[in-house]
Image (cartoon, rainbow, N blue to C red; front, side):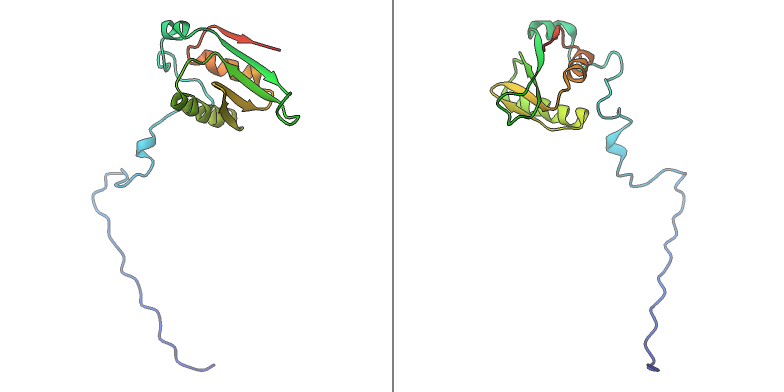
Length: 134
C-alpha cells in the first residue's frame, strides 16, 4: 500500500473575457418566453381567428365510458381537419391536460373525464361554438 502513485495533473483554468453578462451559448434561447403548458395564449395571439373557427362548425366535447375497457375518455368531435393536424392537436392536448390523447375515427380522445377543461382549452384558442355533452 505504500506504492508511489502518479498524481493527477492540474487542469488549466480557461479565462472568459468580455462576456458583458450574457450567455454565449444559451441552450434555452430558442424556447423564448412562452407560456406554461395548458395556459391559454395571450390576448390577440390565438392560433386562428373567430371567423375561421365558426367556419369549421361546432365542436362537441363529451365523455364516454363504453367501449374503452371501462375507462372514461373525453371525446372531441366535429374537428374538420386532416389526420396530421389531428395528431398535432392530440399532442398539444396531451401536454396541456397532462394525460394521454389519441385520434380515433376523426375524433380526438383524451383520457379521463375532462370535459370542462378541454372545452375551455378550445374556447381559449378561438374555437366557437363548443358544446359540452353529458
